[in-house]
Amino acid sequence: MNHTGRNSHSYLAVFREALKREREAQIAVMRQEIRTLSPEARERKGRALLGLSGKYVGREVGGFHLVRFGREREFGETEIRVGDVVLVSHGREPLRSGIEGTVTEITPRAITVAFPDFPPPWVERRNLRIDLYVNDVAFRRMEEALTRFARVSPEVYPLKKVLLGEDDGVSVAPLGEVTFADRDLNPSQQEAVRKALAEPLLFLVHGPPGTGKTRTILEYILQEVRQGKKVLATADSNTACDNLLLGLVERGSG
Image (cartoon, rainbow, N blue to C red):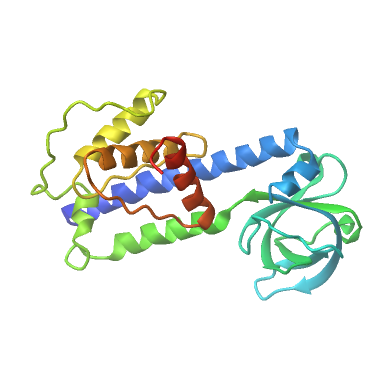
């Protein structure tokens, strides 16, 4: 195996471990929310569906058991999507009584969940609850992107050498003193901003929920604008774009 292959393997190993830890952190956040928030509060956040009745509808090709849960009232806005891992429960302690499943279909009034084992009889009762447990769709997409990255050659995708730190021709411009607009950034966030400003091609900010990634990116955008540069900021959802815009407006850059 050549030098690039070994670096690619190391790159994949590092980021697959990072994805694993981020997934675990997201589950921990969801478990904490389930413990501390009322069912109604979680539903308002779009992370739970309440008052459901279940019906076993058979097995799919892969052998998973399908149960359809529904109610008369429409679900409205929800973060739960096809492919997400959810916790289906009855009673007042979902973390103790619940079972995990994967969403296979969702409509305005019904949601179908696949279980690897035959579900307990209570899944066909009334007044059941479904909680978002982990957004596995996003994690699968990131894992697929890493796999595609490993397969593509540097000749087809020249940026691969930059990502792997193999492009010795890229020089980092010296960076002067940075005056931070957000004075409450912690040292690691400040370091990320400095390195992003010094990197001419690409810089990745990665971390589990609650570590201040958006706050760090907002500071980076402000610093680039201070230098007279134009910044195009994109995100994977309208909500994420709104959060960036609101953050900039709050900092006086609207």
